[in-house]
Image (cartoon, rainbow, N blue to C red):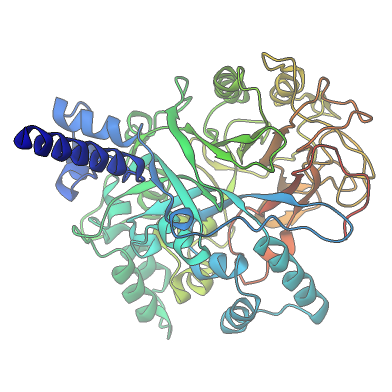
Length: 551
């Protein structure tokens, strides 16, 4: 009898212990990272062996998720004021790989250190501009949700940082990271330095005090590191709310094959002992990667949300494709979220440039490819171009050298004056006409009371409008009026309940207001923090839509 009772007690304790273990947060199951040799193999072999192919597929379909901030007791800020109830501030920012990591982290956290960084980088901002920059940093500090595009992990150009993890740690936030691409190009990996080094040497054929410094910096940045190189590039969600049900879903329609199509770019024959400018440009244009565009989804929950839960959809649509292909990618997103019966935040770089590809200056292309050491990124590229390519050129990964093309300020318009139909218009009409299964819609409203600058018009409440169209989020180094400015980045909101995208009088919790574009902050240092400006929107947590102005 005693042995039976003893056995029963032991079994009971074991059951309780097992239940206690199951109740504890389980560590995330990460996809296995690729080795340096495997990454080289992925460049060399179009059809890798099944084990490596499966490993790559798992990496491109399984997100990295960490809720360390919530596990340690950190909670959302839920900013509010005497004039208005609490709200969730959401940010979307294409951070250009995280090249200016310190500037990015201080922009979200520390006005004093950001000001010191501006001084170190030789900022020429006026007193009034500095006041605006400081206000915008204070604005970003109140954000509880960040959607970030172009986020590196283990790349030479960003000092092998895990940008999402480091930034989340510095800001006290949870994060989810989805891999878009594994960068397998030997130039990007630092295996073949001769092209860029020879170009620097040729650019500085005449004696110049900075020539040796520039060459040494490039060699150092592009030095191969088999231990630290991960070659990952993707999209991240950072949140002070716990991230649940995180999914990484590649698009069925890609529009551009960053492996096969890029390897087709011919590399000119190298003359003995010399690398021509043509070789340099072709090497710069080509960018061989494995992977493709995707959507990263995550749920955040809180009893203060009008429906208890919100789904965040972060994406980066293809730039090297037609507007029609981007619309196919949008269609995949809409099909995925159609049955959701609570608020949705859809944010990302949508590349709504109105044509195939987005132009970029050669200075930005060099910086994006080879990093941002103080001389190379801030001074070297500009001066090298002055010697090597006096006329300058505009780079497009699929088209090579192209000229400036006039772009409209408002890609949502059905037609473009003097240019005919707008091929991007269908993208926005798809969103505007879309109905979730429960009959609700995305919010396309724009009224004086709830737009940041009192402007009206389509999407003015969630995305800042300017005098004509929208405030640009992407700009070339030199702009001429509307030429070289683009509205590529967007935040679209499905409120708790909205039965028509333009019903101004209808009240709804989580309806967007005061959408902003923070250009002054992004342009606070020479060469900018990123080639994209951050955008924000405020989402009230209460049941009714606010009617008072911002403070």
